[in-house]
Amino acid sequence: MKMSKTSKIIIYILLGLVALYFLSPFVYMLFTAFKTEAEAIAYPPKLFPETWHFENFINAWKAQPFGTFFLNSILVTVGTTAGQILSCSLVAYGFARFNFKGKNVLFMILLSTMMIPWDVTMIPQYMEFKMFGWINTLKPLIIPAWFGSAYYIFLMRQFLMGVPRDFEEAARIDGANAFQIYWKIFMPILKPSLILVGVLNMISVWNDYLGPLIFLQDRSKYTLALGLAAFKGVHETQIIPMLCITIIMIIPPIIVFIIAQKYIVEGTSGAIK
Image (cartoon, rainbow, N blue to C red; front, side, top):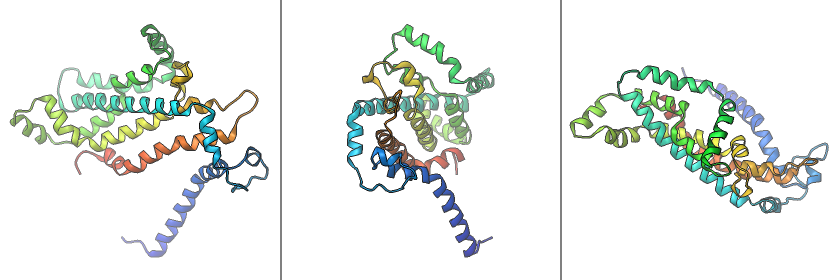
C-alpha cells in the first residue's frame, strides 16, 4: 500500500522535529564553544556568540597535552578493536561451525558472563594487573580485548549460524583446512558483522573513562576522556575548553559511524540476504 504525498510530508515533518529535539543540545554546545566564559554562563542564554572566538579550540588543545592523549586513545582503540575482531570471530566460528561435547554448556557459561557487571571484577582485575606489573601502562586497556567479549562472540555466532554448510564443504573438497576455511571463507562473509563489532567497540573504548582512571596514573598515559576531565576543578570548571575538547572528541566516532552505517544493519540482519 502506497502512502499519499500528504502522509509522507507529515511523517517527514514529525521526524524532522524529533531529530531537531535530539540535536538541539549538540547544536547549542557547538555554538557555545565559540563564546567567551561570560557569554556561556549568561542568562538568558543566547544561541549565537556576539564574536566568534575560533581560538578557543587552539587554546583548549594547548591547555593540556592533548596531542599525547589523542595518540593514546587511538592506540587503545585500534588495539582493542583488532583484538576483539580477531578473537571474537575465531571463537564464534568454533561455536557456530563445530560440533563437540559440551558446546552448548560452554556457550551458556559464556553468555552468563554478560550478567556480571564490570564493577564486580574491577578490583580482582586491578590486583591481577598489579601482580603482572601492568599498572600505569596501556596494557590493561588493550590486552584483555584479545580474549574476546561474550556479547560480540554471540553476535558473530548468530551471524555465522545463517551461513549454509555448502560453503565449507566446497572448501574442504578443495583441500582447505579448518583455519583456511575460517580465514578465507568466513572472514569475508563476516565483513558486515566485523564492521559492526568494530564500530561498537570503538565507541565504547573511545569514550571509556573509568578504565583509564583506575589503571593509569602518569599523565603521559592519559586518554582523551581523562584529559577532558582535567578541566574540572575543585572550585570551578572551565566550560569553554571542555566544550571545545568534547566537540573534537566526538568527531572521530561520528565519522566512523557515517562511513560504516550501511554495514550496521547488514551485521544484525543475517549472513545471507
